[in-house]
Length: 454
Picture 1 (tube, helix red, strand yellow):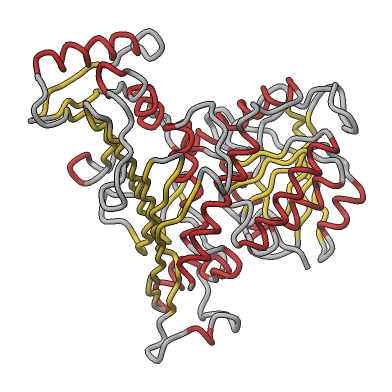
Picture 2 (picture 1 turned 120 degrees about the vertical axis):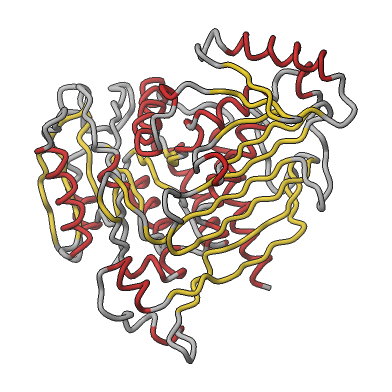
């Protein structure tokens, strides 16, 4: 049985797209086995172009129940309630039924990743647009299938796209913008394997609270054969940011533009008590028991790091999974892009109250008076698009002060991805660099896993 889970996206499909089953110009969404909390996050709000009627194809079980509970919460809240009307189609053959019946025109896929590449291929071959949560594939075999799937999408005149929420986080946006100012940043360094020109690090947690409720992880989330190892999962966002920030609008071609220097993988050690807290299950399922060590601890290969070269610049990407964040903390992100005149850095540690903050650090020996003037001029230009930005000197660095109005939170970024997808659908095509760069991204992550596994 093919397993996947869905994320509802607010998208409008152009009537010019061939082979689409539109109803009054509205999207009819089909949701597959919604087992990931992302499935509900994107349904926190509604948009006029979206039909409130949503067809959900899934197997019965706790994952579906958790999804339905969250949607009921959105529909019954006092502040701007939604009005989703869910039509359930349950049974073990949910994917085959959806592809055969096609009551909608768009499917968004996320969650269990074991056969996600095959599921995406089935939907695209059936003439459906697909918005897929990361990762679209978790190994080299899946990457080979993904290559063929993009060719099928072009043939069938449908759009296949992945959900890159981190492109909409304000510090990532401003980091990308600031490195475009030559007077401040200089030129993008080539870097070395030991001191890469760009570094992206991410820390995540198995147990967390989202929308006021603890996230209940399905048991398969702890099975890297189904979820994927960390080096091909969360790193998808980080590799995407390297490409999107440092080479905007440029096509990344694999393998000529990418070479892997090194990669490694390490396990997080999960106790039965931790597993119970995260899943609300009393014991490890049978498929995880053979992996337990003599003390009954489950090693989950959720941590990984890669050092690679992309278009003659060195990059390092790493991901770490802890079980639970410290009090007041949460998932964190660190990023540095090194220029000949300055480094542009995102920090999100305890000193920043676990909120991402942006800093600019001039190169050693810089004329600080002149540098401050150039930086102030750059921020003044950015204020035309992002009003309210300011600078504060903190030691040798300048802290870019960002108004809270831009900090809308990770949950809201799913809607922003959907709006971008909407624009592409209305045009009937993606930007020319998106498809080759999606392929380059998954080439990088699956090559890293292959390298680390040797």
